[in-house]
Image 1 (cartoon, rainbow, N blue to C red):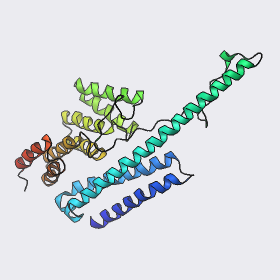
Image 2 (tube, one colour; image 1 turned 180 degrees about the vertical axis):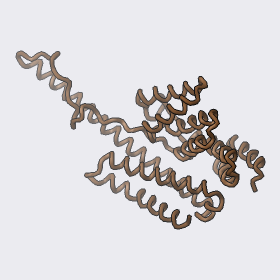
Image 3 (cartoon, one colour; image 1 turned 30 degrees about the horizontal axis):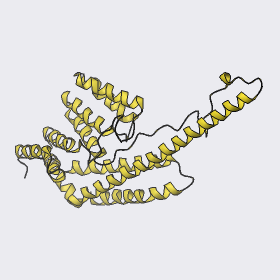
Image 4 (cartoon, one colour; image 1 turned 45 degrees about the vertical axis):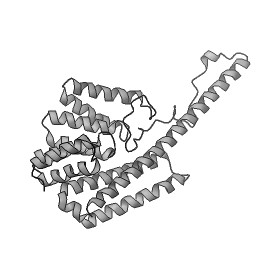
Length: 285
């Protein structure tokens, strides 16, 4: 476990260090940055899953609580970098839209000055840079501690389809159609990875799966919810429910480690009290 952890951590640290330089490279694109960030997120989630699956002994071998602290720091870096890429993407989209509108206005005005030109027959102005439209908006990032904004507030605005897909899955959950909700939330996180509602979708998918009695997959959903936003509003509940699910699955040692993290990371939250009760029920040391 130790050599594996060191190799993965070294790779992650190197990747974080390389991303700012990549952003300065004129040949780099937003797609390159997104690919790098996705790779980082996947490696980090894999490492966290490996540590939790290995239980207390694996965490101690990896360096104890400091290993989790380092992962938390890297998650913060990931959220910051993803937010910067999103800001850059939005800026490019605004510039393209504004420039395209200006060109269209000029074409209209020139047509009015020309004999025989009918402005109503002008074709739609091609988007600046080609592609037939402004750059597709990337799913906005959520900074640690930020709540899901939806389409209001100061946070990034959701695409119409993203908001509708989430609300459709949420409605299925509220109606008690848990299988449909689980399926729809699964499709949502695939379609909008890294969006402001992605961690919430993982969490609610866990709730649906829990209702279906699929504790193993519910545990994975709660883990994804926590890993995606370790300081978000759902983080304490996701960690608590992950620990409880591990206990139900008979992984008592792993459950105790996870439940212990609730009190360590969120000592003033109501979930910390619930985690303590659950640890006593499992006879955690």
